[in-house]
Length: 413
Image (cartoon, rainbow, N blue to C red):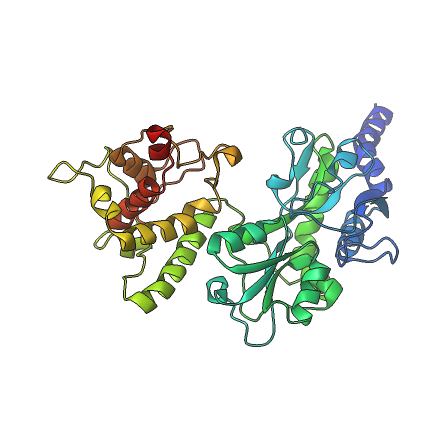
């Protein structure tokens, strides 16, 4: 009987002992600058992987995955998640949240707790503003085909696109640009720090996690516990500093496409303010200022479409005859809609339709368009602008859509 109890106890311990004895194989990209460099065998991901393995009581074994020495976007498809899913390694560091997981990988790959925050950082000479909207009138470098590029377009900045962070830094050093919005984890490679006081806005930041296989529950649990211990001891922050990675803790709020709306509104407001300073026209009212007397909680839109004026005519009709009102509508539309969602041509239409033809998915009368802008469209990227734009400015946007519409020309033919 005693022998049976002893054997049963050993059997219960064996899985844990096997886990402790097995090395932790961590997939790393061969060319990732300050994160990982196979040729030198160094980098933040290398150091964190080694620290996590040590915390787990396992040997650290790097599995190097070849990649191009040029990042195309924050959720780079070069992330070695497929090798992880296929069992070539046990973990992948620096995975920027669920957005990095393709739908076909989600059943097989899971993410640990976030252990640091990363974002597109502002870099520039001393005195550079920490506010993106203060960059109007300056030349700003962005990395092509990244979210930072999209944000620069949406805000109406005077941007210059370079394909790599190295070329962004070169453009900054040669004074081709006045500032650069650079992916933070690359800055250690160039020994650069972000502009003092700058924090990436939520649209430009992510929380980085370790990825493990969903089927490997023991490793997933152990990695999570190891990261928690390393964060509590300040070791993650120390490794960030040692590798020149901006010392960002995990953010409370991260990338959300809806966050771009407020940036666009701020950008549109800034551009209109520049025009207003010259013409005396009033600036765009955003947030609570757009609806005086309403708090944020009370800014819910009405449950029914807005009616036409007392004369039975849409306010947009009046604004169509006023070039200044139409111009204002154009500025607002360009700053909040045109750069991010709605395309400039029918050929480029995706889930966000082209708005200058005769087709309207959710009703094409002025009142129906006003209702759509105010309420948004459930289940789509069309968010509600209630409380963000004043009622008057919404009608001016509609006036711009009408005056710039190709529908009339098509009808005339």
